Length: 260
Image 1 (cartoon, rainbow, N blue to C red):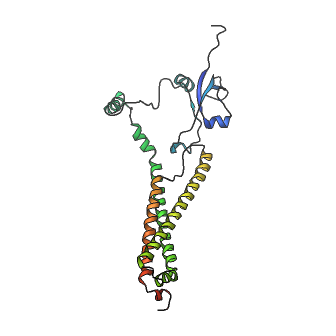
Image 2 (cartoon, rainbow, N blue to C red):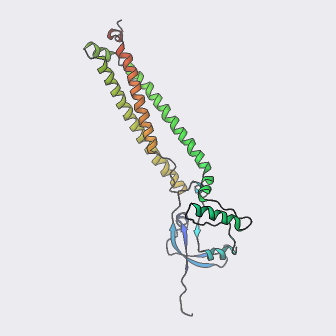
Protein backbone atom coordinates (compact mmCIF):
# COMPACT_ATOMS: atom_id res chain seq x y z
CA UNK A 1 0.00 0.00 0.00
CA UNK A 2 1.25 3.52 -0.75
CA UNK A 3 2.72 5.32 2.23
CA UNK A 4 3.32 2.12 4.21
CA UNK A 5 6.93 1.81 5.26
CA UNK A 6 8.40 -1.64 4.58
CA UNK A 7 10.31 -3.08 7.50
CA UNK A 8 13.90 -3.92 6.58
CA UNK A 9 15.08 -7.51 6.87
CA UNK A 10 17.74 -8.14 9.48
CA UNK A 11 21.09 -9.90 9.43
CA UNK A 12 23.73 -10.83 11.98
CA UNK A 13 27.45 -10.22 11.42
CA UNK A 14 30.48 -11.42 13.35
CA UNK A 15 32.54 -9.17 15.59
CA UNK A 16 35.58 -9.33 13.28
CA UNK A 17 33.60 -7.89 10.35
CA UNK A 18 32.01 -5.27 12.60
CA UNK A 19 35.41 -4.12 13.84
CA UNK A 20 37.10 -4.04 10.42
CA UNK A 21 34.20 -2.39 8.59
CA UNK A 22 33.30 -0.15 11.57
CA UNK A 23 29.72 -1.37 11.66
CA UNK A 24 27.33 -1.04 14.59
CA UNK A 25 23.86 -2.24 15.42
CA UNK A 26 21.21 -0.60 13.27
CA UNK A 27 23.50 0.16 10.31
CA UNK A 28 22.02 -0.42 6.85
CA UNK A 29 23.81 -2.56 4.30
CA UNK A 30 23.13 -3.69 0.74
CA UNK A 31 23.44 -7.40 0.04
CA UNK A 32 24.29 -8.39 -3.54
CA UNK A 33 25.86 -11.40 -5.23
CA UNK A 34 28.49 -9.27 -7.00
CA UNK A 35 30.00 -5.87 -6.09
CA UNK A 36 28.04 -3.08 -7.72
CA UNK A 37 24.94 -5.16 -8.42
CA UNK A 38 21.54 -4.12 -7.16
CA UNK A 39 20.66 -5.88 -3.96
CA UNK A 40 18.48 -5.88 -0.89
CA UNK A 41 18.88 -3.32 1.84
CA UNK A 42 19.14 -4.94 5.26
CA UNK A 43 19.73 -3.82 8.84
CA UNK A 44 22.38 -5.14 11.23
CA UNK A 45 20.38 -6.59 14.12
CA UNK A 46 23.07 -8.57 15.95
CA UNK A 47 26.84 -8.87 16.25
CA UNK A 48 28.00 -12.39 17.10
CA UNK A 49 31.17 -13.28 18.99
CA UNK A 50 33.62 -15.78 17.49
CA UNK A 51 33.54 -19.27 18.95
CA UNK A 52 36.55 -20.94 20.56
CA UNK A 53 36.88 -23.45 17.72
CA UNK A 54 40.49 -24.46 16.87
CA UNK A 55 39.51 -25.29 13.27
CA UNK A 56 38.44 -21.67 12.63
CA UNK A 57 41.49 -19.91 14.09
CA UNK A 58 43.52 -19.67 10.88
CA UNK A 59 40.67 -19.04 8.45
CA UNK A 60 40.22 -15.33 9.13
CA UNK A 61 36.80 -15.38 7.45
CA UNK A 62 33.94 -12.92 7.76
CA UNK A 63 30.58 -14.44 8.59
CA UNK A 64 27.12 -13.06 7.92
CA UNK A 65 23.96 -14.85 9.06
CA UNK A 66 20.91 -14.39 6.86
CA UNK A 67 17.36 -15.64 6.70
CA UNK A 68 17.05 -18.75 4.55
CA UNK A 69 15.04 -17.08 1.80
CA UNK A 70 17.57 -14.23 1.71
CA UNK A 71 20.39 -16.70 1.23
CA UNK A 72 18.52 -18.56 -1.49
CA UNK A 73 17.86 -15.34 -3.36
CA UNK A 74 21.44 -14.14 -2.96
CA UNK A 75 23.12 -17.34 -4.13
CA UNK A 76 20.47 -18.30 -6.74
CA UNK A 77 20.94 -21.88 -5.61
CA UNK A 78 17.26 -22.77 -5.46
CA UNK A 79 16.08 -25.40 -3.05
CA UNK A 80 19.41 -27.26 -2.93
CA UNK A 81 21.79 -27.40 0.02
CA UNK A 82 25.22 -28.87 0.60
CA UNK A 83 24.48 -29.89 4.17
CA UNK A 84 21.87 -29.41 6.86
CA UNK A 85 21.61 -30.17 10.57
CA UNK A 86 18.83 -32.04 12.34
CA UNK A 87 18.46 -31.98 16.11
CA UNK A 88 17.36 -35.23 17.72
CA UNK A 89 16.58 -36.35 21.23
CA UNK A 90 19.49 -38.79 21.22
CA UNK A 91 19.49 -42.49 21.88
CA UNK A 92 17.36 -44.68 19.60
CA UNK A 93 15.73 -41.68 17.91
CA UNK A 94 19.14 -40.54 16.68
CA UNK A 95 19.87 -43.95 15.18
CA UNK A 96 16.49 -43.97 13.43
CA UNK A 97 17.06 -40.46 12.07
CA UNK A 98 20.51 -41.40 10.72
CA UNK A 99 19.07 -44.52 9.02
CA UNK A 100 16.12 -42.61 7.54
CA UNK A 101 18.31 -39.84 6.11
CA UNK A 102 20.76 -42.34 4.62
CA UNK A 103 17.89 -44.19 2.95
CA UNK A 104 16.06 -41.06 1.72
CA UNK A 105 17.96 -40.70 -1.55
CA UNK A 106 21.15 -41.65 -3.31
CA UNK A 107 24.03 -39.49 -2.14
CA UNK A 108 22.57 -38.69 1.26
CA UNK A 109 25.07 -39.42 4.03
CA UNK A 110 24.19 -38.72 7.66
CA UNK A 111 26.86 -38.16 10.28
CA UNK A 112 26.47 -37.71 14.01
CA UNK A 113 27.71 -34.36 15.26
CA UNK A 114 30.09 -35.99 17.73
CA UNK A 115 31.68 -38.03 14.91
CA UNK A 116 32.16 -34.88 12.82
CA UNK A 117 33.69 -33.07 15.79
CA UNK A 118 36.13 -35.93 16.45
CA UNK A 119 37.18 -36.07 12.79
CA UNK A 120 37.66 -32.33 12.35
CA UNK A 121 39.57 -31.95 15.62
CA UNK A 122 41.86 -34.98 15.15
CA UNK A 123 44.85 -32.80 14.26
CA UNK A 124 44.33 -30.59 17.29
CA UNK A 125 43.98 -33.65 19.54
CA UNK A 126 47.38 -34.88 18.36
CA UNK A 127 48.89 -31.44 18.98
CA UNK A 128 47.29 -31.37 22.44
CA UNK A 129 48.80 -34.77 23.32
CA UNK A 130 52.17 -33.61 22.02
CA UNK A 131 52.05 -30.51 24.20
CA UNK A 132 50.98 -32.59 27.20
CA UNK A 133 53.94 -34.90 26.65
CA UNK A 134 56.30 -31.90 26.44
CA UNK A 135 54.84 -30.55 29.68
CA UNK A 136 55.31 -33.85 31.52
CA UNK A 137 58.90 -34.19 30.25
CA UNK A 138 59.66 -30.61 31.30
CA UNK A 139 58.25 -31.14 34.78
CA UNK A 140 60.11 -34.42 35.28
CA UNK A 141 63.39 -32.98 33.97
CA UNK A 142 63.12 -29.91 36.19
CA UNK A 143 62.26 -32.12 39.17
CA UNK A 144 65.37 -34.25 38.59
CA UNK A 145 67.44 -31.08 38.29
CA UNK A 146 65.95 -29.90 41.59
CA UNK A 147 66.81 -33.26 43.14
CA UNK A 148 70.45 -32.90 42.12
CA UNK A 149 70.60 -29.35 43.49
CA UNK A 150 69.15 -30.48 46.81
CA UNK A 151 71.67 -33.31 47.11
CA UNK A 152 74.54 -30.91 46.47
CA UNK A 153 73.21 -28.28 48.88
CA UNK A 154 72.69 -30.80 51.68
CA UNK A 155 76.11 -32.29 51.08
CA UNK A 156 77.64 -28.81 51.49
CA UNK A 157 76.28 -28.66 55.05
CA UNK A 158 78.72 -31.22 56.36
CA UNK A 159 80.14 -28.85 58.98
CA UNK A 160 76.69 -27.84 60.22
CA UNK A 161 75.64 -31.47 60.62
CA UNK A 162 78.95 -32.30 62.35
CA UNK A 163 78.46 -29.42 64.80
CA UNK A 164 74.93 -30.58 65.57
CA UNK A 165 76.12 -34.14 66.12
CA UNK A 166 78.95 -33.01 68.43
CA UNK A 167 76.53 -30.86 70.42
CA UNK A 168 74.41 -33.92 71.21
CA UNK A 169 71.62 -33.64 68.62
CA UNK A 170 70.39 -37.10 67.62
CA UNK A 171 70.62 -38.48 64.11
CA UNK A 172 66.83 -38.80 63.82
CA UNK A 173 66.33 -35.11 64.67
CA UNK A 174 68.91 -34.05 62.08
CA UNK A 175 67.35 -36.26 59.40
CA UNK A 176 63.86 -34.91 60.15
CA UNK A 177 64.99 -31.29 60.06
CA UNK A 178 66.79 -31.73 56.72
CA UNK A 179 63.81 -33.56 55.17
CA UNK A 180 61.39 -30.84 56.33
CA UNK A 181 63.68 -28.12 55.02
CA UNK A 182 64.05 -29.89 51.66
CA UNK A 183 60.26 -30.34 51.40
CA UNK A 184 59.60 -26.66 52.12
CA UNK A 185 62.19 -25.57 49.56
CA UNK A 186 60.72 -27.82 46.86
CA UNK A 187 57.19 -26.67 47.68
CA UNK A 188 58.17 -22.98 47.44
CA UNK A 189 60.06 -23.65 44.21
CA UNK A 190 57.04 -25.44 42.72
CA UNK A 191 54.68 -22.63 43.71
CA UNK A 192 57.03 -20.12 42.09
CA UNK A 193 57.15 -22.26 38.94
CA UNK A 194 53.34 -22.48 38.85
CA UNK A 195 53.04 -18.70 39.21
CA UNK A 196 55.64 -18.20 36.47
CA UNK A 197 53.78 -20.63 34.20
CA UNK A 198 50.48 -18.85 34.85
CA UNK A 199 52.03 -15.49 33.94
CA UNK A 200 53.44 -17.05 30.75
CA UNK A 201 50.02 -18.41 29.76
CA UNK A 202 48.44 -14.99 30.31
CA UNK A 203 51.03 -13.37 28.02
CA UNK A 204 50.71 -16.07 25.34
CA UNK A 205 46.89 -16.01 25.36
CA UNK A 206 46.75 -12.22 25.35
CA UNK A 207 49.08 -12.01 22.34
CA UNK A 208 47.58 -14.74 20.14
CA UNK A 209 43.97 -13.98 21.02
CA UNK A 210 44.65 -10.46 19.79
CA UNK A 211 46.39 -11.70 16.63
CA UNK A 212 43.65 -14.18 15.67
CA UNK A 213 40.80 -12.33 17.38
CA UNK A 214 39.42 -15.42 19.03
CA UNK A 215 38.48 -16.38 22.61
CA UNK A 216 40.38 -19.66 22.17
CA UNK A 217 43.02 -20.19 24.85
CA UNK A 218 46.36 -21.26 23.39
CA UNK A 219 48.08 -22.09 26.70
CA UNK A 220 46.64 -23.58 29.88
CA UNK A 221 47.76 -24.32 33.40
CA UNK A 222 45.33 -27.05 34.39
CA UNK A 223 44.59 -28.25 37.93
CA UNK A 224 45.89 -31.69 36.92
CA UNK A 225 49.24 -30.17 35.94
CA UNK A 226 49.46 -28.25 39.22
CA UNK A 227 48.65 -31.33 41.32
CA UNK A 228 51.13 -33.45 39.35
CA UNK A 229 53.90 -30.87 39.79
CA UNK A 230 53.20 -30.44 43.51
CA UNK A 231 53.09 -34.16 44.26
CA UNK A 232 56.19 -34.89 42.19
CA UNK A 233 58.23 -32.06 43.70
CA UNK A 234 57.28 -32.87 47.29
CA UNK A 235 58.00 -36.59 46.84
CA UNK A 236 61.36 -35.88 45.20
CA UNK A 237 62.17 -33.29 47.85
CA UNK A 238 61.49 -35.76 50.66
CA UNK A 239 63.46 -38.50 48.90
CA UNK A 240 66.41 -36.21 48.14
CA UNK A 241 66.47 -34.76 51.64
CA UNK A 242 66.19 -38.20 53.25
CA UNK A 243 68.98 -39.73 51.14
CA UNK A 244 71.37 -36.84 51.73
CA UNK A 245 70.49 -36.57 55.43
CA UNK A 246 70.94 -40.30 56.06
CA UNK A 247 74.27 -40.22 54.28
CA UNK A 248 75.51 -37.37 56.48
CA UNK A 249 73.94 -38.64 59.69
CA UNK A 250 75.61 -42.03 59.38
CA UNK A 251 79.06 -40.50 58.94
CA UNK A 252 81.22 -39.76 61.97
CA UNK A 253 81.27 -36.08 62.97
CA UNK A 254 85.05 -35.91 62.73
CA UNK A 255 84.88 -37.42 59.24
CA UNK A 256 82.43 -34.69 58.22
CA UNK A 257 84.91 -32.11 59.49
CA UNK A 258 87.70 -33.78 57.47
CA UNK A 259 89.71 -34.78 60.53
CA UNK A 260 89.34 -38.51 60.26
